[in-house]
Each structure stands twice: as structure tokens, then as C-alpha cells.
Length: 112
Length: 115
Image (cartoon, rainbow over all chains, first blue to last red):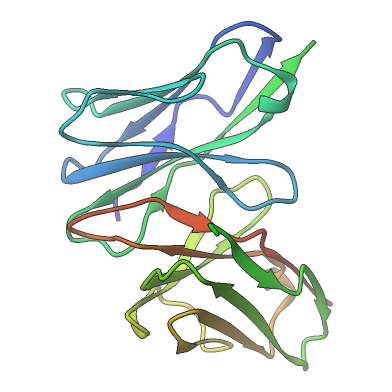
């Protein structure tokens, strides 16, 4: 089936920088998108989600942008901290679906 | 309480053993999921239960047998596993799916090693 993918497997930033993690999706019927953070040895943790009727949503230090024209999703983390080091996954759902489908993941490394 | 609890956290089993993984949530979610995650890979969907009925089985081998005894509990029964089945097994639950999605909450997973 169709799947969600991420552009870069790894991203290294300095503490205090802004981070941008990208994701491309192929299912044009997807109408729900979500970002998860997964630390080593733990389960995925919800960060932020967005529905297809929006193009931007902000949380605390995080912003998700959705570009439906090019089927692109991004997660922006402001003032990245060492505690943000983890693997980040995007996932999608469509109206016919019964489960979220995950993309490949980007490992974010933050050095101080 | 936004917690999904999985037990055990770690499990080592032989190829002839029978074991069960357990998952519990008290958020009133009616959709529950099993995902399998290999190292450095995204979670892969195995099973979906919706209102305590199995709605999705993603071509999972019969040595994995899910069970949903009630709306709060989800089990995964394991029998005659292979070493390649070693992975992190994640349980998740969500309030909404399909027409109105909501976020899925994940447990911490069971790290399974088959020897």
C-alpha cells in the first residue's frame, strides 16, 4: 500500500538551533497527519497532529506545516534542546483507514 | 490518565514456548492496535481491534494470535516463534479512526527476544 516517508534519515543540530524534519506522503486521500517522537527503548510519544483542512498548526516549541499540493509535511522544533534527541516519525490516516501508517523516521541528534 | 500499559517490558522465549503479551488502557478508547518494530525501522501494523472486534489482520503469521477480552485489554499470544520475530511489540489505542482520526497513544512496548 501507499506509505509515508521521510527525506533524511539523520539530522544533526547544535543546541539552540531550529530543526526542520521533513516528510513526504503519497496517499492523496490522507486527511490526518501526526508526528511522534521515539526515544531509545520507549514507545512513540505524540507531539502534534494536523488535519487536511489546515496548513499550519503550532504547539509548544513545535510547528507542523502541511503542503497538500506537493504532499509534504514538516515538523519545526524551535530552540532545539539535547532532550529533543530522538527518532521522529510522521504517520498518516485516511477516512477509509483503521490504523495510522508510519513513515521511515529521522534521527535527530542535538549537541550542546 | 493517558497511559497505555504493556507487560512484560522484556521477554526472552524459546522457539517452542507459549507466551502472552498484555496491554491495558483506561481511556475509554474503542480502537486498539498491535504494531511490531524492528531496530531502526518504523512501527509496522499487525492487528487492529475496533469495538472489541478484529478489523484488520495485516497478513500476520498464525503463530501470533491476538485477543481482546474487553474494551480495556488487548493480548497477543505467541507460539512457536522464530528468531526473526525478535522485535519491540507496541500496543496503542485511539478514540477515533477513519472518519474522525484522533491521536493514538502508545505503550512502552515489550522487547521480545526469541532464542
